[in-house]
Length: 384
Image 1: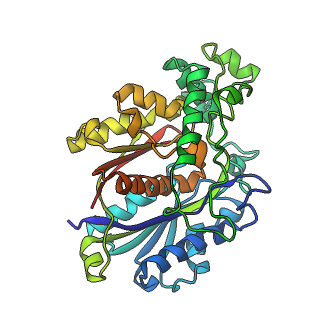
Image 2: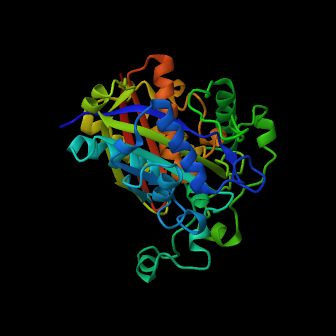
């Protein structure tokens, strides 16, 4: 079996996912194409040597439809012999794209492959794919009386189940902004025109300021259905709407050596699981158990953990279950500060994790991502 290695990884700065955000004027195909070109330019690889480009995107409608990854490959100026395909595993789409890419290398199907992701939430809001439509059908309604719920309700259920009060959630959110503002992300970021830094980081965020925000997801119907909810989830302790793209160059170790490239890390292991689609954000817990069981590693063997901050309650519940070192959890800030551009977040987390291991000299890094519909991915990499 070939060893799959990471040669390079990069991302755009985050942009506020609303009109007027620093990336909102860009067509999402151009945003991803810019990132693909930058990755090839920085590594010096011949784009004609790329066997495939696998991208993640959640809202595959409008400007993000018709296989946005293939369109970005062509827009990037790659030879038309380079194929591309687009994956939807909700928020974990580009993390799943990375797993497919690395597993293809390990199986011998690829020598050189790019995993990537993009989301323009300013142009494709999170529910735009289902506006006015029923994506579930009657059988799901019969299986889950009352119907499935939005992720904000799931976050409220997690906060209630793990006893995470409002001040704890807000303290974690303020920590995310504080750590992100104090960290150096420039090596991760490819500038997009004048956009060179993350627009979503708010260095002045305080617990006191966050305390003034109203709950974002309360309505009378949900309050009646879930009386255990105390309504603690706000815009401040949730990830913001975000525009962004990211990409990772993956090769067999043999091909990297042939090309004179120095791998930065290797892929160690992968796991994916389903979870309760009502409490859909809890999948990060069983998928972490699964990947640790498969590898024989303990949580203390992992030097850094990236647990996506879709909402503050997700990494906090994860940390409670594993008793993990809080200093190793999202140590450069997470999605609450750095943004959550949905289909791009998996490769963004991987870019951040790789940078953290290199800065600290750590060996193993774990990333895990909760996903809509009740799923989660986990990936362990080993710094080289």
